[in-house]
Image 1: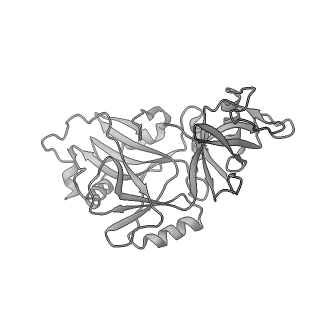
Image 2: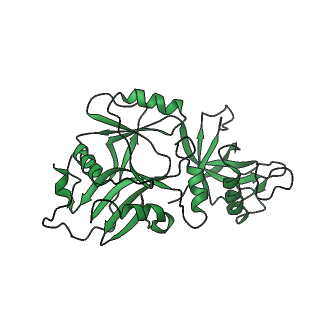
Image 3: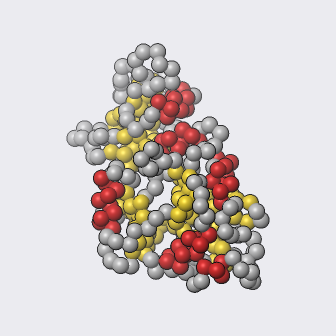
Length: 310
């Protein structure tokens, strides 16, 4: 498919875009697939988004279809500079640390204000551009996507790796990245969970219920020492221990404000007692990275990644 076809007039080019198309989601596997039919990408740790471009406007939707355009003003502005009049682009909105790694908790802290000016979008698929491209192979869709890109610090194309997935996975582990996503180069785009997209995680991640927190000692306003976590088991909340790493002072302040708004005198976990703990209603879930559990069921080497939203 010639990329130039994507910007020339043709029947249906200016047809209205659908309000939302459910994105393709990868299936979790233990190790990357082998073979020349696969490409591999870094798994970005942010919010999955789709950009809808039409009539000189950009709309950014989450994986569940919510309109988050106002939360990513710099991404929306950069999208309007792409070489296209009408399109739907699939990607991930992230905030990068000083080593170029995506940091989900810092992204959430940014968004807790009035939108993130620091967020960038890594685009990795184009599935509508005047005509429906979802039946085209991934290789063709990425070729077309590359043609639309313009130099920008807010919207970039996610790099692909055509070598060994095991090699890229090893790099992801060494640099403490989320993992990798492997995609069939010849596969069409299919909404929902797919086996033509596979994710291999370098660490375990899971959402746990936040049932309380431990304030730090001293008079540091907004600080907290750890979060008290639980998982639902047989209809009851069971403690899985604490998490006290993975959040900066800025993130801790954001968390403290949210938690202080839902303080309750009684712990949601029956029988759990911790001196000095502040209990909260079990309204929030936190995404936690960890290395396994102890014999008592507590998380080992737990690290906070962010609150579950959308």
